[in-house]
Length: 330
Ligand code: PBG
Image 1 (spheres, rainbow, N blue to C red):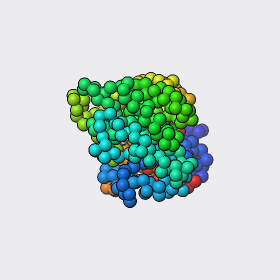
Image 2 (image 1 turned 90 degrees about the horizontal axis):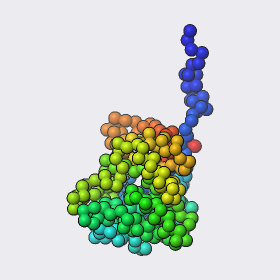
Image 3 (image 1 turned 180 degrees about the horizontal axis):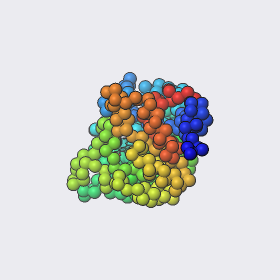
Image 4 (image 1 turned 45 degrees about the horizontal axis):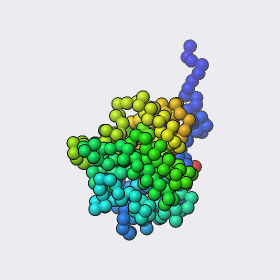
């Protein structure tokens, strides 16, 4: 006899499907990455990220207002630093009048309630495109952590709500938490890129910031001595547990789509908010396929974003944020 249970009953039409749907996307899910450059009147499209731009501070204001009007209330700031300001130690990162510090103030000046998170890592400031300081052919951990902690305090003093260390040095969450607390910045949070993989999907982002790592003193042109091996799963749990114990308020898995097993593992293991970063290469792939007419852009975009949330993400950092909320009927 045919089974009593017919699963297709719950798929008969959109009304019943929406009644039993498990995962919904809303503007509250998103964290919007923004790229900032010096100058005025600058809105430059990033070659490998169609329809995504670098903004000078004046135009950043308009973009932030647009985001707010769409219900997008959190941004993640990145800066593109000119070559002459880069050095091995990322000295410019600590400049209180630096581009990041001014960008934070700019966002808060036009939109005081916008939640501002900042990227904390040396690569945009490093002449070698690495996330740490290089000494004797090595990326040195503990000195780098000291700089990251100072950088975090500087961002927080400029008005950042959260700092987001993306460097993968050991012990940086504790170093940053202690530095913030010592400066009485106790309400400033930390979103840790806790399970960040050494991924080839970051290519377009490195174009956006001109921050690709170079081959220097035996250090290869990759970040495999600090970012995680993409073959590893258990290690992501260890990394995340350590970051939580060191004081991370939010943890992150990055990239997104290829790592949804990790997202689910972490969701099942820890009771903290999880962010997933759908990275630049993921954005570029869909834009390219859609340009060729090979994929339906909006349909694939919604499927991917929903998959990330279904896997266990509370927060999705995505270059698609604006595109998604424009087509949501919420
Ligand atoms: C650097 C950083 C990277 C990204 C965010 N922060 C690149 C890298 O680690 O080389 C990648 C984001 C993306 O690809 O969208 N600390």
